[in-house]
Image 1 (cartoon, rainbow, N blue to C red):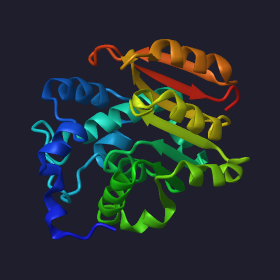
Image 2: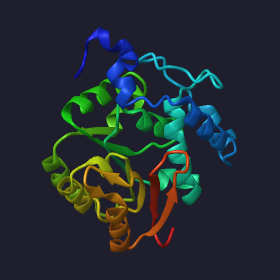
Image 3: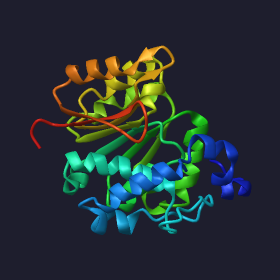
Length: 244
């Protein structure tokens, strides 16, 4: 567990701002405009994309109680809810997020009303950061969250997933991982009910368009691919059950 008081302003660190804290104002404006036109803006996003003071995040000038990063994460989730009714959020028993940054998307999901289990899978250093951040921002829900950094632990939990409604989230993280890691993780979550994946066309020498096209043809899931026009060479792949 991270305890250093120096971390209280960790969202101001250059390495965090460059790798985990989205702050492109032009793209933020596009996503903010999309959110305020969403059918769930008034009841969901307007009330719940506020920022915590913790970490001292940079604020968004058009809505000072939030940040570009929180708008960016809410935008991903809104795309998911356009395909899957928001009312189903607590029919999901477990959310698995592959690569969770510092935990902000997880925080937003609990803010908007999710109440069940959440597994965050990441490198050990990031798992520590996520636990530190979420313990200070949604402490009332921290017992619902598992911070996992070993594939072996995921394997041991595989049987637990049976007969549960699972949402699998991976925003660019899966598409930036070696094929061997992807296959191991997806094998564990092969029977997930819902998917929210964002990916870029190519990473290193991997053709992600081909990879995710093959993935979507394997599983008995209704898939929707949507090109993200304001993020060049990136797309969403959203999956939901045949019968909801």
